[in-house]
Length: 320
Image 1 (spheres, rainbow, N blue to C red):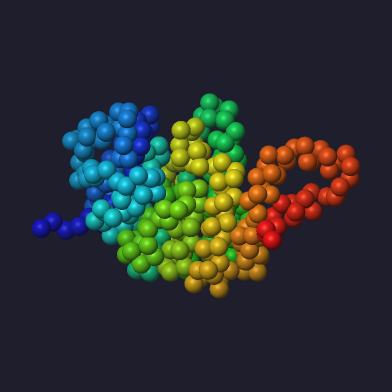
Image 2: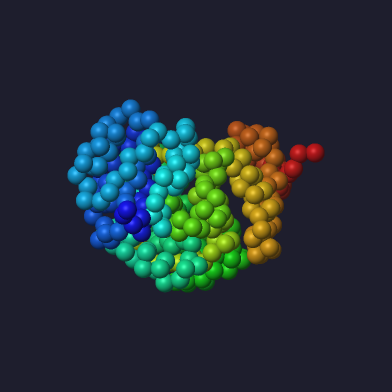
C-alpha cells in the first residue's frame, strides 16, 4: 500500500481549454515531488476533457480524474477536497499558474508549525488589453491589483489567524479579501475537515468566508514572494459573479455568518460596525439606488438635497 501524498493539487474545470494547457504545465513544473493532481470537470463541452486525459497519460505525477461532481462551481471545489488524499490541499484554477517553487516553499513553512492551517503569498495579476476593455475586468484589476496582502497592518511570517481577525483594518483597509484567491493558498487538510468545506451558498465571497473560518481556528503562514499568477479575463467565474446586487446579497449573508461565528469576539469595533452595516443593507433600496444612482446624484447636486453620506445612509437602512 502506497503512502498518501503530501500535497493534492486540486484543479476544478469547466470549459477551460483556452488556458488549461498553461495551467497544467505549471503544475507539472513543480520542483516538489510528493504530490498528486486531482482534476474534476463540471461538464465541459469544449476540449477540456481531452486535454485532461492527455495530461493524465503524460504526467510524471499521479493524476486522478474524478467522476462528475454535483452541479455548481463551489460544489466542484468541495468535490475535489473530498477526493484528495494529501495532507495539504493546493487549489489551482484552470486559468491560473503556479511558480515552480510554489509548493516547496509553502509546504516548508506549513511543516514548521503543526498549528498552521493556511499558507498564502502575493500573486502576479495577468490581464491583457482586451480584458481591460471590459468594465468588470477593470474593476477586479483596480480592486485587487498585485498587493491585496498590503492591507494587513502587521502581517508576519507566522501568526495566529485570530490576531489577523482582530486587525482594525480587516474590512476597512485595502481589499476585503486580504488573503487572495484559492490559487495563492495552501490548506492543511486536517484544518479543512475541522472547519468544513467551502460554503455552497456563496459565490463571490466564498473563498474569503473560508479563510476567516480557518483563521479563527489556526495559525497562518505568509511568504513574501509571488508564488502564483491570477488571471483576469471575461470568461472567468469571478467576472460573472460580480454583479452588484448579487454581491450585496452575499455581503449580507457573509456579514451575518461572521457576526455569529465563535471567533467574532476577536473583531475590532471598526470591523463589527462595518459588518453590522453590511448585514443590515436593504436590498430593495440598494436595487433602486443602483438603477437610479446617476439621476439621483444629479438631482442632489441641482437641488441641494444633502451630502452623499446622507444618501448612502438612506440606502443602507434596514426594512421596517
